[in-house]
Amino acid sequence: MFLLLRMGLCELFPGVLVWFDFCERLGVCWSESTNPIPTHSFAGSDSTASTMQSFFWHVLDAKPVYAALVREVEEAVRSGAIPAEGNITWIQSQDLPYFQACLKEAMRIRPAVGLNISRLVPPEGAELDGHFFPGGTSVAVNGWVLHRDREAFGQDADDFRPERWLEDEERARKMERYMFQVCLFLLLSC
Picture 1 (cartoon, one colour):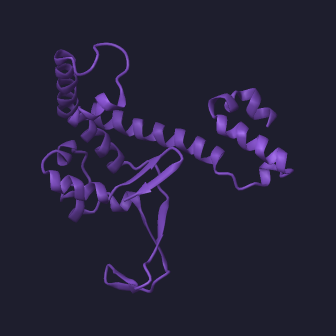
Picture 2 (picture 1 turned 90 degrees about the vertical axis):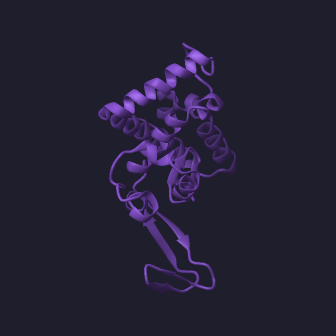
């Protein structure tokens, strides 16, 4: 704990200090506990960095994408939808459809977590890819594989193309159901 305090990590992640205090009061050695807070805190920062790296790499690598994103941001500033300087709010960012499409596409083409996300087959069983799995069987798929499914994302599933999220609202909802996305303290797989 001293090392974490010295590094200032307990100030950055207050949940870590709360967990240490809780373990101390119970007389449990925190290093032997199964607490998810430190792991999720650090993993959350890493997945955010990975997503942002993917976003910037792909946007800056594709001149038409970059130009379209700049146009959208400049228009939003001109219309007063976002400030000309400083940060924008989460709500303001939701009104930038091309920006949102670029973020979704960056998370799709380079998922931050390469781990398989497991689910249990429902009690009645399920057929997956022509194979029957009895109820209670643990099955998993990797986001890197799932996000390149041509049926879900199109024949160009290997390409970074944010426009796929804006072309058809119903198709976009279907694609969102296939996405594995990671958030701090919460793993979503829809």
